[in-house]
Structures are given as C-alpha cells and as structure tokens.
Image 1 (tube, one colour):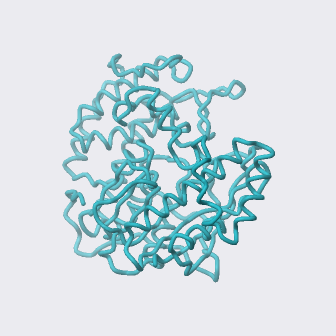
Image 2 (tube, rainbow, N blue to C red; image 1 turned 45 degrees about the vertical axis):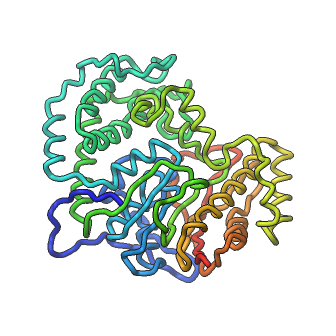
Length: 427
C-alpha cells in the first residue's frame, strides 16, 4: 500500500465525533450534523452518503482491530476511505468512474504544509485572463455550455493546475472540477446536465469563486492531515468490482452500491469530463461514451442474468413478478433491473473469492421505485449474499434527510427515503 508524508502529529490524537446513536433497529442522526469535516467538502459529488455513517460503522460494527483492511468497491468520491484513514485503518477503494478515482485519491492523500504553502503562493497572483487556448475542450457547441469568459478563465485555471508536480496537480484539478458545473450555463441542481430554457442561469465567473473554493479545500486538507493518527496506508484504484482482484486479501467491506437506474454519474459530471478528459485517461468523447455504458446495470444485454433465479432462492418469484411488471411499462427499465442484480451477483462472487473468512460485509442500500413499482432491493441483496456464502448477522436503517436533488420532481424513479444497513459475515 502507498505511504504518504504527513504533518508532524500532535501528541494527543484528535478524533471526529460520531454523533450517531442506535435505537433498536434504527439509527438516530441528529439534524444539523456536520458532514464536511476534513477533506469531505473537497467536491460536491452526487449521491454520496454522509461521512458520519461510515465513521459509525467502522467504530461500532467492524471488529476493533486497526490492522484489518477496509475495502470499498464502490468508493465514489472516497467517503469511506477518508474515514478509514482518519481511524488509522488500512484501506482500499475502487470505482469504475475515473473522476471519482481522481477525487478520492486527492481526498485521501495528505499534502504537507510546504505543499499547501506553495499552492497558495502560486495562486495568489494568478492571471485569470491569460488565455491558454490549447487547453479548451474540443467539444461541439462548447458555447452552449460556457460563456466565452468562463471558457477563457477555466483554461487559465487548468494551465496553472497542470504546472504543479503530480500530487499538487491532482489536488488543484479536483478544486477546479468542483466549480465547473457552477460556472457553466447548466442547471446546478439536477442529475442531468442540461441548460434550462425557462430558468435562465447567471453563473459566476470562475475567477470569482475558484479562490474561495481553493481556500476551503486548503483548510480542509490541513484539518485532515492534523487528524490523521498515522500515515494513510491505502490506495484508490480505477477498477470494475466485478473483475478486480487485489494483490492481498481484504478483511472487511464497507460500501454503498449504486442504486438501480438512479444517478448516471458520468452523465451528471459530463462537463467535468469535457475539461479533464486527458487527465482522466480518456482519448476522446467516444471513450467517454463507452465508459458510461460500463457501470452496474447500464449494459443493454440481460443475457448474463441466467444465474440469478437460483441465487435468489425464495425471492425468485417476487423478483420475476417485479421485473415483469416494470418491463410491461418499460422494456428498457425492466432489463436494467435484471442486469443490475446480475452484475451485483458477479461482484459478490468476485469479492467472496479474496475476502478473508470471518470478514464483515457492510452494505448501505435502499429500495427503489421504478415505473411506480417498488423494487425490494434489500431483500434481493440479502438473498444474493446468502447464496454467495455470506450470513446476515444484523440489519438496521435510517432516514435520508439530505438528497442531492434540491427540488420536488415528477419522475419514474421517485425519491429514496430510507437507507438500510445490512451486516454480513463471510463464511
């Protein structure tokens, strides 16, 4: 695992408060709980759960041995890996989304005081009007998404970002990515990237908000490094959880898998991909389109679902009825449900192969509403885990109060109001 340099640590180790308490089968999460300490506020990533939850799970649900490796196969922007590092636990995070990996890597890799001083000095007198035309994305109708002023200033910001050494460059690029949607003409609050024809947006100029976001990010990084009990032992890898094989066995899993037919993360962050295409390892927009079709449940072919019926056991009849009803209303969405569970089963079988016996698998997931049909995701996942060689040892739930979507909407998917926490042991 990678080792990163840190600030000198204080003699008394500080720990972030848990706040969460359990009352029977429910978690009690107070209103107004602080959810962006340390580097958690580095990027407004869609659909992430509050860090207080994995913090609670690591402290209260996992075995207390700090040598046990925590794996998050759907790590997104790195919430669980950050919390694992803050608890002094070794970690491994994977995600199929290249932007997620960039963000999670920046959030878990502490920068030294000298690194942060250099970053602040470099940006202090930056000329946002210096036009680096060669860095403007080669995208059709870019002017639909960005004003000429925003394009010029974003290119200038990117030029400065890529002038830094690799570890500082990654941090600055993530800060840049965090403002791209805000300074674009696209609506800020929707999961789809589009320019509203009815609600005209007046985006701020990049030069007005980048310094603010940079300062917040620097402060968060300073807090993160000061709270670390030891050098982080971990890494973030771009990988498919259905196929990825780590170089060493893992002990425990703490994760929140993607929801069925929910957020298309790469479409949601299309503008970020425009600007960071090269840095994310993509050759062109066709590469981006291909990557969008890879995540769980996004394939068009459901032929790989042949192993599902047997694995679902007693839930088989309910599953078939659910998929059939959705399929009558939308063949595409019916197939998406079937493919999602087939993909999850492939993921489980893969992880079971390299997880140590006795390890915990903690899954945070909610049921879905698709075409006005409730998909009992929780019960289906329990069946798949049990068929794969996991035993359910605990389950509880909590109410979701903070949604990525900030306004009421009429749609086929509805809003998930409860998350369920399933705790399995690997047999």
